[in-house]
Image 1: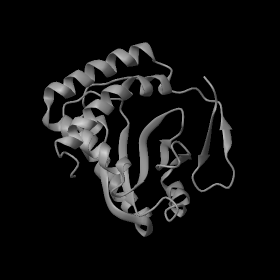
Image 2: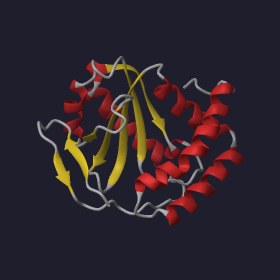
Image 3: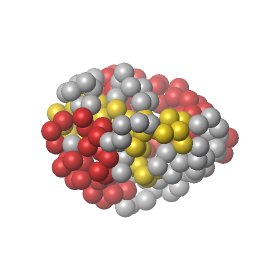
Length: 193
């Protein structure tokens, strides 16, 4: 595994972390996931208040009742612009988020509590952008199309076995399914939160 450059939000320099990623594990749906999101949303709402321009959304598989997932709560917070919200990178440090410039032209991306072991992902995304609309559409579509959600779960389980220690390959292999389903979702009007 290649090392990644993560920066503890709020620090002035990045550090090269060589800790291995935790294995990708898909677990049965946990009914506590929505409450875990609610708790984190409340903390984020306070810490990021000056930069928020929209809601804080629970996205990803843990936001779909009944869907097995990696036990990582994905959170998307709406901001006006990436430039205007740069100070939020430092503000996230108080909540133990690590910043990583993944798709930095589209979002500010964080993980918590560490790059190797993650319980939360945070995406600061401009409200109304495709990066904002598409995850909401995908989530909403899976919530109302059980057969598609089941197909996605089967795919994730297969890919987790294949790419157990390679997050990037796992994510890339899911992309065609997510893209096709999201296109259907957006076309059908599932982008409203």
